[in-house]
Length: 306
Image (cartoon, rainbow, N blue to C red; front, side, top):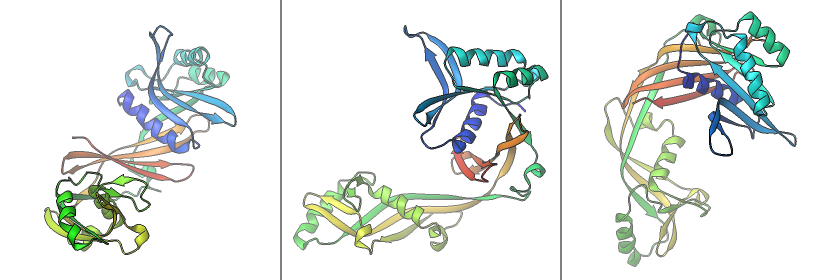
């Protein structure tokens, strides 16, 4: 298996982030400098946090060199030197090609944890990722315009409020949150409406081809109402009529790779990632499904590669 170094580091960092206690941070490709500003080192992954009242700093270095064979003992020696020179409390070595026997022995004697990353086939993860066709629902919702309905407006104020609204864009911060502590926009209210109603695309009978729809968000509970910020004060919003273009496409995921991140000492997996892709509206999108072995926790990430 061969992958770019940055890709390997991102994979390891995503797994470790799900395992770390609250308050810990992971930085990728962190640089170290001398007092005169000259760079003296770059670290693949650095994990920082507090254990009790004491600070903790952990170095994770990744190696992906298939043409060089297994990771040698000399690499482990370098990491031990880095741990001492840069005051790391812990160091871990991650390799995509395993470790030479001498490297394993030296790492054990120096307290360096060893991890491997390898590719698996579908049968190897069938217990939690069945060998079947997987589909993803690709939602598209583009807000065109809106109409904000407020309460407590006298007829003589309506023309001025309408004129004020016509001057604003959908992403202008003309609304206040129900607690009146924060400003927000009609566009943000639209996104919240979409996310709070996952069956909206089905109820609106939206299909593969984009079509215009009219939807209404009703705020019956006064405690849930936005407020329209005007020159005459904050007015409670009872309805927002949305005019949008929407579509719903069902895409088949093309499974490209399944990775396993393992602890060499106990020969047990720590986590897995299923990598797939699908063709969306803006080109090819990447799909990632992470699974943490100890908890069975799943995490999905979708990224547009266009």
